[in-house]
Amino acid sequence: MFSKKILTGLLVTIVAAGILAGCGSSASKNQPAAKSGALYSQIKSSKEIKIGTEGVYAPYSFHDESGKLVGYDVEVAEQVAKKLGVKPVFVETKWDAMIAGLDAGRFDVIANQVAVTEERKQKYEFSNPYIFIHGVLLTSKANNQIKTFTDLKGKKAAQTLTSNWGKTSEKYGATLVGVDGFEQSAELIQAGRADATINAEVAFLDYLKKKPNADLKVVATTKEAIVCALPIKKGNAELVKDINKALAELQADGTLTKLSLKYFGKDVSKN
Image (cartoon, rainbow, N blue to C red; front, side, top):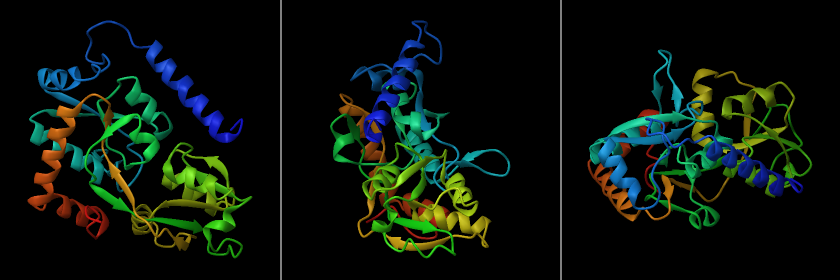
């Protein structure tokens, strides 16, 4: 964008700058998180850890029928916070502003199926992985033009613009149609306003639980799993160490497996 990638980068930079400009110097509860090694001390002092998440991406982060924020990532983050001895405070944010929000200190970590990439590792610390996800290419049942990922060239793909899936669609030559989450992607395809989407297999399976007659089909599946973890600003090794210790304990006592089965019907916490 300028090329699309350049334009997307500019937009994220502008959003980040806007958030930074709006952060005052008062000591309110919404004050940005401290930088570098001071972050963990602030978390311990306030007894709270701020967690960025979407709240619209089932089964990872969404609201149930009662309006409660739930999901695999949400419950994993809650269990990690419990191990750290602090209260989890979720800050719901659209995906396309999520990374900018972490940069601006609106939250301390992100729990929202964030893929670990070499590009992101240059800028952020990552916890150990707690989820391994395969992607699927979805189209309408009547679509016979898209059968493989390479068939996306010149087609419209409904994606959150800065997500790993969105970048994958662009890599195959698709034109992106921006959405807020998976359900909107599914709706645009069924309405004929997009040709396809690449998204997490488990998100699609969860969608089918609610809408078993959805006009969608899987035409291809990624060979490699996407590894997801909790991103944190650089310079917070002690916080990362304790989060990893918490995740290891949750893996050892079966909590991650239990949560995986609850939300996905299979254990996605192991590769």
